[in-house]
Image 1: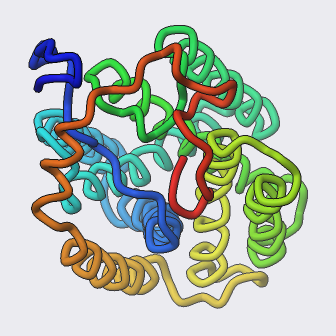
Image 2: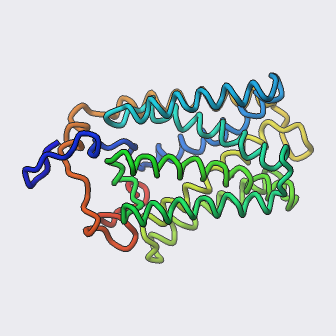
Length: 285
């Protein structure tokens, strides 16, 4: 790739955009994948040998991430397959931490919050930006997916914390997280919260929100509808596939080429939030 200065960037350092545009459809699919990952994880470990289920999920996660990293640009099915597998395996890791190893939910929530904060700190110290529109190098892509995995684990234990330890139940937890996910958008629009901070704040909350909704639908407990993890997983999967098919039709061939022709933003050009320009949180982060 040749920059505007005419200097050719190394092939292994400069990539086309590897993440989707942040639209309403992005948020809907993201919440659906978090919910599906929760119920599918529960379905796998209760219907198969747990150790085998976790091992296979981990293997498929590695394969999906390898495919994502090898892709030269954003591909709808490749990217979202990786997100789905992070959701499934991240749920398993969080459940193992809390229910197998026995780390209390408040402590597990704190541990994953610290891990996420550390990833953000290292990412910003290295790249001077946390903007998803800056994912144009392998290193930034690595930071991005490490962040995604940490948010899924944190969101899983946070959702379990509110529903079980704080005894709010699944439906009340879903309402609480629905309110929580709206706060960054409101704060950005009317309170001056930076777009990158607003994006990642909302991104973390998508996990417990989606999981609380599908747990409420699937659970046979008194605070659930008792539809079962299999049926809820199937319904969420059909919805995800339908929306991804719609999303795939919106990708224009010229968009990838135009993205590839743009040089990666210079570290010194970012604002304090790590973004190259201020945009609406519905379309950018």
